[in-house]
Image 1: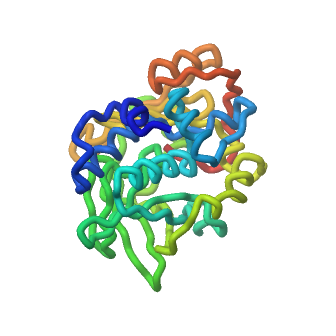
Image 2 (image 1 turned 180 degrees about the horizontal axis):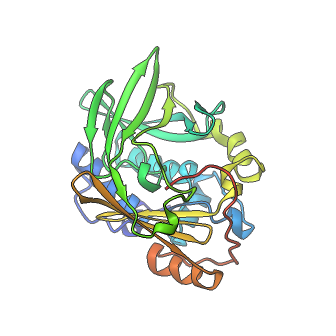
Length: 290
């Protein structure tokens, strides 16, 4: 694997010698704007691989995206190769309908230590929940970013990531009651501990998430990509476009209903993805908001 090929993939040409917060932020922003958060392999009849070499082939060589277990595994390799002190962590994702965090550790995130300070790095949550800058690991401090205000809190050794969202304007009235619409201003995202993990800790859940009928990833096909001003997200046959800070305390959220013949063109033109196998778009009944 060639780290220069990764930098070319994310279109990152800045200095790579300085192991500082600016470099960390630039790499995160380049990755989330070049590499989609997506699970399309599942709906093309292909596996979501966990090994680093298959991930590199999928994401870098074939210019695809992946879910958190893939894109954050790749990011872990990049940062450690560059010399950053990086640790894998495991997260438990919050379910709004169930009002609880997942029982199983289903999310992979990273901790990076710089000059005695710890930061959370996560390029694999996507949609409007995606951080755009590393989050300093400080409990009880609001950390405003362009997507929203992120907030970390620690209770009894468990850390929680929440967000405070803006209002949203939806000009397409027929989508005001869409099940894809996040309706909460204050949103819990996931919990985690600082116990170091290895990629082997995620092998069982990697299989479960792509095979179980109870998984949101088998229920829905999705692809999301951050932009300079917002985020695009395709779920099934519904394309959404969110523009952050459309007005004061207001995001603009637009919905477009596609037919199957339009999906391939949208993937190519919006997400820069060309699939090798036929995608079967799916919008199941599992909770998934954009």
